[in-house]
Amino acid sequence: MIALLVNIRSLHNVGSIFRTSDAAGIEKIYITGYTPTPIDQFGAIRPQIGKVALGAEKDIPWQYYRSATALIDKLKKDGFTILAIEQSKNSKTYSKIKLTKKELEKTVLIVGNEIRGLSPAILKRADQILEIPMYGKKESLNVSVAFGIVAYGLMTQR
Image 1 (cartoon, rainbow, N blue to C red):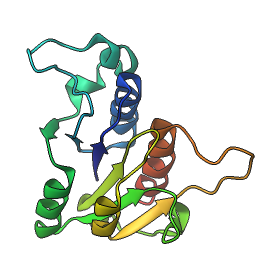
Image 2: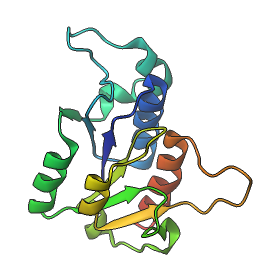
Image 3: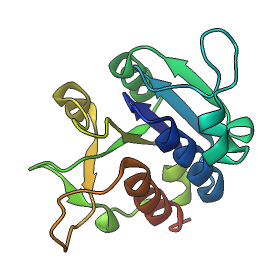
Image 4: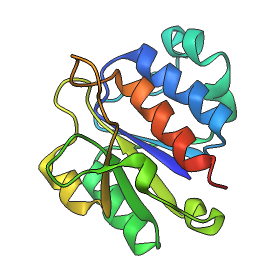
């Protein structure tokens, strides 16, 4: 499985997603939009990401694409299944999704902006929209926490 980060603002969230990706066995991370990369445009390492990632930003291959929608279209053409994490009228509880090991190898898990989430253009391209049931008073989780819950939920099916 690969991860796709769309317009995430926080360097700490990006670092946490790298660390969780390493622990969960994610093969690659695509970074899009204004999501910060582990290395800035001048080639300098971003210590805020490394502080949280604990070196996972060096172990997990990553690649930057400006346009998330163009990347999703390319990945779909390459045979990937696109799963978006978002609360939506069309979303399904993540734990109800069952994937084989082979299917997981060609799966993309997308998370978006901490406040606005994923755009309608991205959700339209998703094969499935997944959500985490919320039982308390809060309506959502931190993006890196949501990523971890769903990534582990899917990867433990291997």
